[in-house]
Length: 117
Image 1 (cartoon, rainbow, N blue to C red):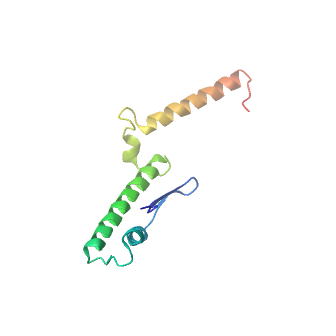
Image 2: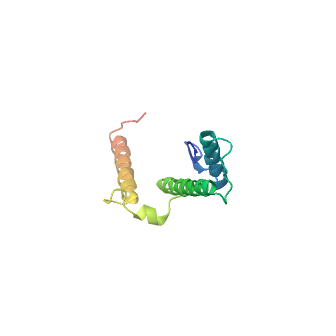
Image 3: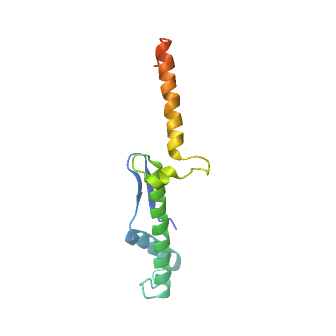
């Protein structure tokens, strides 16, 4: 049952499908497996199961989208930037350290008349 609820694109980032699109994909999969005679109306037991699965996939997709957005420093929330990545140090400290390394490299290369290509 492939719902493709989360779509990851290098340019657009993480996008998710709506609840209705996810429910339709799950309902199509159920129909393929159990036949066209299955009742997937929201009031039927099978339809309720499809709704629950669609809700689950939607919630997971939204969580992944939030996590992915917070990995981008430009759009990240303050709480995520202050939180630890692996329980050790905040994202901001890692970025500062990397920028410091880059700045030292540029200063060293300028003072030694070395040109980076």
